[in-house]
Amino acid sequence: MVFTSCNEKSNKAQEKISVTFAGTEPATTGQSRMMQSVADKLNATGRFNATVQVAGALSGDTDALVTQAKLGINLVVPSDPGRLASQFNIPDLNILMAPYILTDPAALKKLPDTKLFKEWQAELEKQGIVYITNMYNGFRCFYTTTPVEHVADLSGLRIRGFGNAIGNNLAKYFGFANIGIAWGEVFPGIQQKTLDGCEVQVANADGSRIYEVAKNLAMTKHYMLQSAFVCSAAFYRGLSDADRELFTKTMREAAVEYGQIIQNEEVGYYDNMKKNGVKIVDVDIAEFQKAIEPLYTNNDLGFSAGLKDRLFKELAE
Image (cartoon, rainbow, N blue to C red; front, side):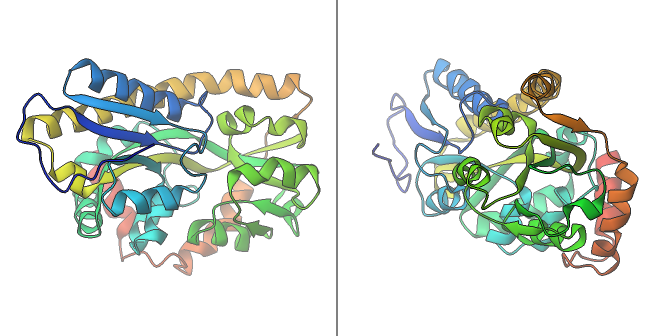
């Protein structure tokens, strides 16, 4: 596929705006379907020529896709706050995905209107990326080859998780070895016993048939996963005011819509796990929350003073 740089803004009103939505999740997940929905709506206006490439068709590495957008390629990429925090050195962004901080998907509708979000937007735009919106993408739990009912059961297990500060600190306080490999390597890794499991949202686990190799699911819900949609700053700045407003509005409305769709669909995914022989354990979440408390008392993620209180205050305004 040939990408078009957006360094020059067309003076021809009839020329369509080319943009590609690129992700790593299977085509069946809510995130992928959300991007297709946005592309369809943008194309229906006659102003855009939007295409969608998912399931790692352009790259199985989210950070690599974001880097391409940063370099000026007309890409919209679903990353997540933790990845962005590490990739662009904005530690406070980790608060959005830090264990057991945000636990209500409804908060994400208000998030883009907060001063904090706008400050993060400004920091990212300086580095070539525009932060558009966040979408609920499922609670992440542990899928393992051996049963996990308590924090101690994770000790020594080789678990595929986020290869960033959030993922490494979760592993530190839960006691497992964090293996930050590409998602496409997880199924064969568990199958070949080089991994003992993964922590992931149920839609992605189902789409990748993780139930065939990991028969235990611990409902820890330690992260409220969010798809943090970003795009090339060159692309965004090259849009007219009207097209920019249309693009942003369409993205944010679809994020709210599909966040709710994802919540509604999760029950069916969990039922499918059971049908495929997965044992689902409702763990004592308070035990896991207690285990993670030192992450915040030690401020391992380097949050600014009062960040959590400020976030909740702005979300409530």
